[in-house]
Image (cartoon, rainbow, N blue to C red):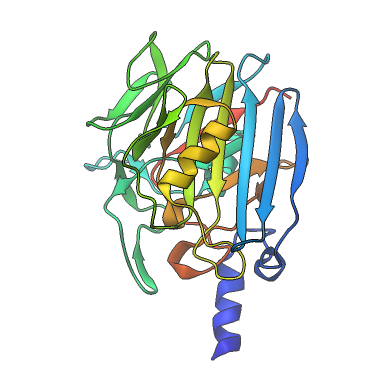
Length: 281
């Protein structure tokens, strides 16, 4: 039975992703992905294992552009998107870095039975826009990005070209938001901006994986974002959705973190939308 389960997990894992090697606790590392783009994997061993992935992007660098997942024009139903993993998003649109977006509906998970699978119709919760086309609307924390990379949270500072809804605000005016949950640890995804509006901060935290990474509370995530310079920061969808992918030198998606969809370490969850970055390399 165990061998059959392991085989199923390996078959379900993203291309090039080795579940067994991902669950040897890694070491901290720092890499320059492109001019003005730094990736850091930060590993803590005590009091419990914790693996964090941070990307710092100088958004004023030439060639840096953003893309929120566009609507699927072939879908004639009520849902504007077909679910994709973050790796599939990188493959489909050729972005260099991508993280999962906000929450979405419908969604459920009952052991091995879950929705959506890749290709199933879904709708983002909150506002979503891609290349100037608004395809979902609703209240909640929101990230706005203009064509010249002016980025703001919760209010437009120009004509947005990409809009992405989040789960909750983490940081305002350089301070953690009061009242954030300080008990529940889970995988997390967050996006933030520094005070000058020059550096975008992405964070993906691995979790729900004993002896590898337990995860973070929202309160801890807010402190982490402040420590990396965030003046403002917002949580995106977390749990099994939290994923960070980059395109490698061969143009193939490389999963940098350890997702935990359906309780399987290394398995990516198909989600509604994503935040992608072209680096102009």
